[in-house]
Image (cartoon, rainbow, N blue to C red; front, side, top):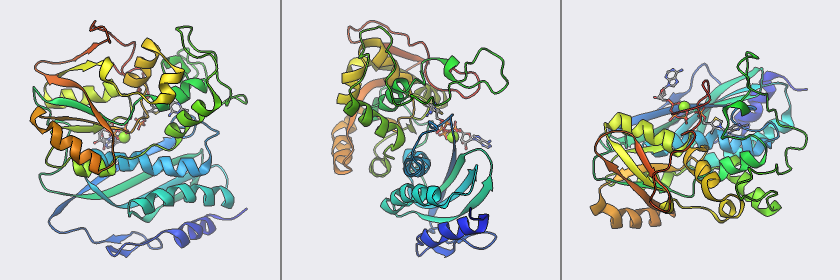
Length: 361
Ligand SMILES: Nc1ncnc2c1ncn2[C@@H]1O[C@H](COP(=O)(O)OP(=O)(O)OP(=O)(O)O)[C@@H](O)[C@H]1O
Ligand SMILES: Cc1ncc(C[n+]2csc(CCOP(=O)(O)O)c2C)c(N)n1
Ligand SMILES: [Mg+2]
């Protein structure tokens, strides 16, 4: 058993420093030199065990994900990541666990040139809170409120994989009853990570694979545990995209945030949704559509842009090695009209994840 300050020393020994970090880990506050002439973008997100990640998530994957979901927020603003702070609440002091956590966290930090400049270490239920800082020139940030009627609606990557992994683990993201009920009321059955968690559950009887192939499950689980923050894509979209948001709660829920902020509506075509081979192999029809449109945990960029920039955007994203597709368009009015592959209106049972009510409509 090592003490709090031993844990901090382990973190400090491995945190790299950029030239703009005047004073990093070790004092009451870090001293940082912001880039002159640019705005500082700041975002923070928390991951709680059993709420944001399954209890059996390997520590290295948790380290990666805790930073990735935060870098995803900077990406959605077209900000260039620079610094981060890490607040850890740990049930016990376990040096090996911390070392593995740092393997994942610092691997991703290194890939993006991000310095860990401070944080906090306490005892408590397993929870990781990260704050990230990045730079964006004034006027270049991609905000939620900039979608315009007539814009194309784009998505990077292939949404739905992470939610498919959770479904196969028995977390049933389609159902608010799958959430823990901290008060013990409201009918929320407690779904802790069960001992048999790695086994596929029977699917929903709508023609989906009953037991997903081990390779397919592994691919989906990797998308849940190690999302790719679309930092290069966000930077590439500066000056090209109008509005942008990252998909954490669910594509339709996050699209709803963009539309309300912009005062417009949208039309989405299910036939144009990009789908990974692993998802196509494990879920079909409306079960797949629900995962892709409302599952969440995708950390893909959802953005709007004028149609005349279609080729420029395709080229910029190809240079950023980021696949993307147009899935609909921004229209006048409000709300989201979803059409199934036959062109018929389709209403999903829910639009995404909401912490307290279980639904985001
Ligand atoms: N406790 C809080 N105090 C101050 N501001 C908050 C608090 N919680 C959220 N916010 C702010 O509200 C806005 C929306 O936050 P939200 O967490 O929904 O966005 P997000 O981080 O992009 O999404 P997600 O958390 O699903 O990844 C952000 O500007 C965020 O900084
Ligand atoms: C064990 C487990 N159960 C459910 C989920 C699904 N989930 C939890 S929070 C969230 C939205 C983003 O969170 P926030 O809005 O706090 O950033 C989603 C899609 C999960 N990842 N792990
Ligand atoms: Mg948040």
